[in-house]
Length: 327
Ligand code: ADP
Ligand code: MG
Image 1 (cartoon, rainbow, N blue to C red):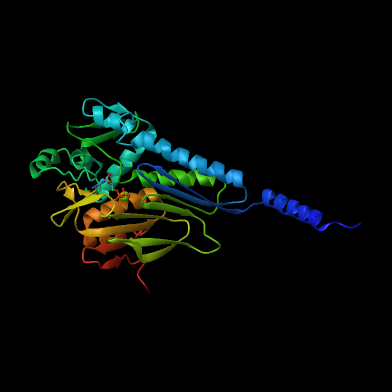
Image 2 (cartoon, rainbow, N blue to C red):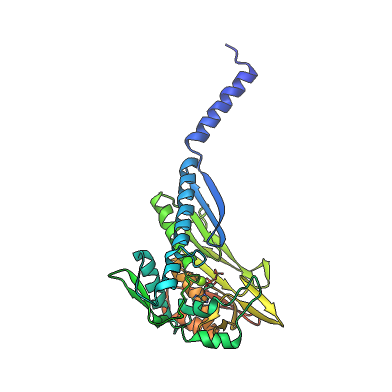
């Protein structure tokens, strides 16, 4: 029997495409804009539709966390706290109460450098409109900035403020938290190689083609220039910089990381990158060390032991914690 060339070709391609459908192990990517930032998911999967399902679940989770914790959305539980917690305890999901409690622990650990009540003054800044508060306005609002004004009752899952004028904002920790939630979801889908990014916060599962993932830390003044490459397997990394949301006025930079003790943009560093096991921790610590500055910040990182830091000083000098320093 003779098989014509064209018939042979069609059998050949049918076999190829069947194989492809049965086991199409590949990398799958998706990007989306959620939580006011760029979300990127990349994962390895044997099955295309399973991969898509896992990605959808991740994006759905990001939207859920945003709806719960956004301070832009008046209907979010976080906004409900800001509207009413000075009058009476506000009942919230235990998940939100726990994250607010965790933020309080980070405040205690960092001597108040991390403080979600920074927002009592922070809301007066509008970086897009180049607006900032006057010294008088900062002075008037600063009394409300203190993490001890926020009282969480984990038993009743309520949050209250001890005085009026307090506002909270989880912008320094919520993206890292959302990344951790995303990673938990991917693990529950059986994913073993993945990366999830929300703005400056990323976490990695497994390796990439048998090698570590390489995460670049950008130059504070040039998004295309990389100052360090960090190899990572099963780890989280967060960067805080003064170039994310800012405006310059008379040579001074006003940006989105506020020193709770002054109500003004923290100016001791240009950027801080933290590497650790989970993104909630690295996110919170990157904001914290940015406020604390190089000496106290690195000292905290060395004391914690299970995290590392790369900081870029105002003069451009790059410092590494001892876990990253060359041997
Ligand atoms: P990004 O949001 O660019 O990833 P960060 O993780 O450093 O950067 O978080 C900065 C955000 O943290 C700010 O936009 C604000 O919402 C919040 N924030 C600013 N200052 C503080 C502070 N001292 N403590 C806690 N949160 C802060
Ligand atoms: Mg942060």
